[in-house]
Length: 179
Image (cartoon, rainbow, N blue to C red; front, side):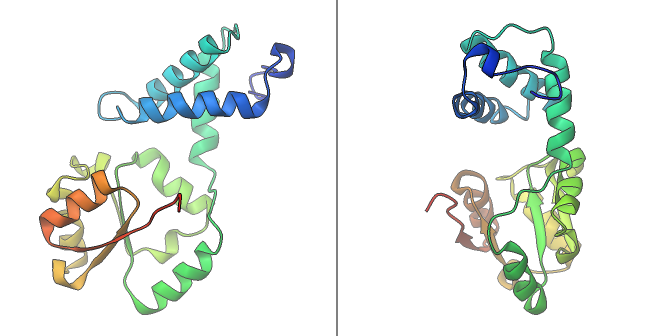
């Protein structure tokens, strides 16, 4: 918002209120990422948020471009991630399977300085299959030359991660971000 000189204060809206509304729309639209490009999803999120909050601007395109640029080169980490990855990487081979976008995944991992922990980074957009499709898991297994019995998959989505790995007979560990 600052980069596009849009002031929430002038509109009498707190940052918390704006973020709550934006995150609601952003979550809704990102569930449609198979249909829309990242820039379209972000633009729709801003359009809906600004409309609901009655903020008038002609800079929605600038907002979405600025957001995507900042998003792609920022890495917000949960506590102790580096310590956990250091221990795991010392004992196991690590890989990432993501339904994200190529333009975002590696730059975000580099910004967080964690890409070196992973032997493979499999991005659905790059290979044409997304979780929970078994093909994305088979692709990762093939790249790592591993069998399902040699792997444990840690994921935060029962709908995409758990549903996918159970089809391939990979053990699953659920990472519940909220609890």
